[in-house]
Image (cartoon, rainbow, N blue to C red; front, top):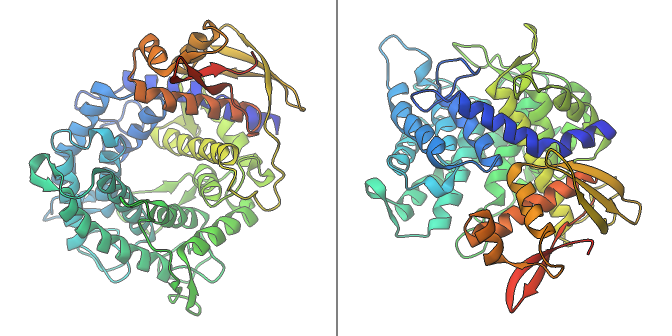
Length: 485
């Protein structure tokens, strides 16, 4: 597992480098295309925004990308007499997800109005079991339905965070928009569950009885998990996990909870890891253009989201591939394919998504004692850090007892600066406001950086719980101190 751990521990600096590469190639219109020299598209611009978020980048580049999306989505999706690729559900679903990638900018000019337009478009083009590949057609697409459900769940969560009665720019009211979103989520969930196979997977084609598809299974899993994980404004679950009908398109109808469907899909992905761990899966349901799912990263993300440990041995080959696909010269991840490896935004997006899922899972295992251990996985005890040393190139040497040994962790510039501030501070630490002032950030941002740093340290120890920065009280104020002192 050494190479797997190396790839995970290298994620933070690689994500930062990929973000800087993307910023250098942002189009004059604010968008990005599939490759660094391609014409801007809704899909690829929406894939870049989460990469920037993972690297802690916001500000003007994000505003410019949002301006591109708010101007492009409705225009691109308008009806065309001779047809064309614009009338595909994915442009609405990807575009909506891109608009929501940085919730703090939801009140940026045009974002709320365009999100409401996307909701209206999805209302107008529902079919029996979800949404079609091409608008105005009747055939349900698993791919498009999963994308739409995932984006709608994100919108629901953003609207819940605002609370009812908030009038957003353009006259969009949060409560009334939420009332339109929730029935659409129900519609999409019903459609996804209808198409689920008795094995716990989803098929390669939507209505045709084909072999199960790893990529479609991961897409549906991630959509249903997003629906089931939201929290309402009252602190209660945003979606009731009641038993509901599952299946019907092929095989008998069963009754299951949404959480059970997600967990069973995750177990199917792990059992069948040989089908996707090094593969790119094409999608014959897509009309008008070739479409490929990067199964090795997409299915890794899905399996972890369903509860797998990032260190599960069945994920090893996929992690190794993602690690090997990093192109230091391009400053991006390559995409494997018949035409040879090339650095693409799609490869970066799905790889970053998989790494972020692994880090979140590691953090939950580390910080939430109520989470049960993974079945078949042996969780390590928390590493007690005994000494810390700063090295060149934003490297940190960490030593731990209890079998932790020594590791080298390379960090982003922001997280390395955070360590340096506390490394040079008194042993009892610094108050949060003092740390914020030295880093030129808002005090509310400090705990987020601390969490990201401790996640990176945990990953460096192979996912075992580990904390370099510990809570402290300094002159009656909350703050942090460095472990190992």
